[in-house]
Image 1 (tube, rainbow, N blue to C red):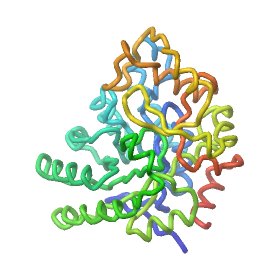
Image 2: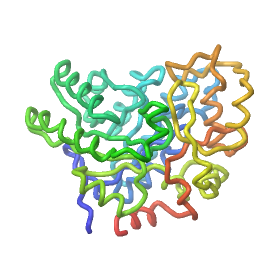
Image 3: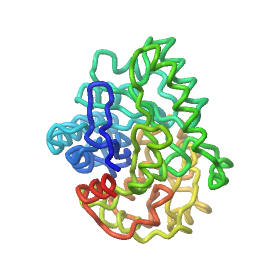
Image 4: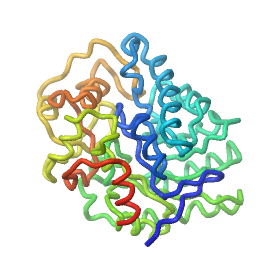
Length: 352
């Protein structure tokens, strides 16, 4: 079955595939730009994006702002006028500044989760940037759409529904995630699709719905579309492409992972997440890492009692220092067995 384009307002993506944002440094300009070039929507993660800037350890906020602009410009050049955006966590310290910087720097879309992006419409006022909250329940979708309607007299440009099979930080409780295999999460997806219809009618717009979490191949895409979704978001599969910005050592962890290696962890910021088991996860069960400086990443992190610095652990991951790294991943990572390119992967996803 041929996949239809994804239309978000005046933006038209050749294929209904968004590459998920992965921080720290996993999805930067090279990956996002190439996905956009091949007809998808490329997403840069702003999470500690300035980690390679010279002043990152002395002024992380300035380093991140500079890197947001730099990577958006570079990704746009690579994409040859493709659609490029950013993923910005609501829980980020300096969230407002990062959103405004991304919009000013030409982000076509901003996808925002790890909390409800209540004030996002205010921060993009006057820009052409399209905005989407990440929601995991119909309750969250209802609260947000109602709030944006009442407070800003507008609605979402699109919605990203992130299910329990996604990677990285997840919008579910530990108890929910432990029993996710028995869920009928499809019913929740259908409810979220239904709940946005009133706002489509009120504002006379189409609000596309993107499904994320556990989407691996062409058949998964078709299944999501059959539920009423307009597109999908895929992250883990793009890690093992030549263009992914991570080190080869990180990519090898994905290629070598078995199903039993994937586990749910509680990150220092208080959210559950999905990661590949390694020596680091073993070590932090019994040892608390000494934290010399706070790099101002997440609002909910308290350096005085956090077991380890998540920024440091994720920088170790992207640079290939695997034994001291937190290796976030999606639920289907064990199915990845060989390196590929963005072009080949996009073709496989589109054609089957």
